[in-house]
Length: 117
Image (cartoon, rainbow, N blue to C red; front, side, top):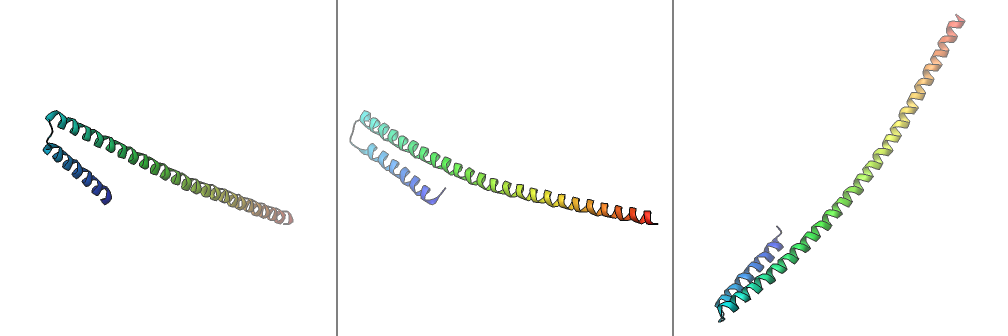
């Protein structure tokens, strides 16, 4: 939990406690006092729900941003890997062709040597 969040939470708890003590000490009848406390608690719960919803929305947006960044990096890596694979296949194909050519040349040289002997 961030320090700022801790401070805000402490302020809210302190305000709630102060308001409750003030209501308890106010010169009102019991039913009016209970109604005032219920209204205050309902308002506090509503504010808490709103703050929780905003926080959840922020977390969802942050998560989506992270997923998008990860997808972008993965696509870049996959593209580089595909390019490297193509280069490796071309190099291997060239090496095989060169080896075939050398074997063919050697076979022709050997054939010529055998015929001349």
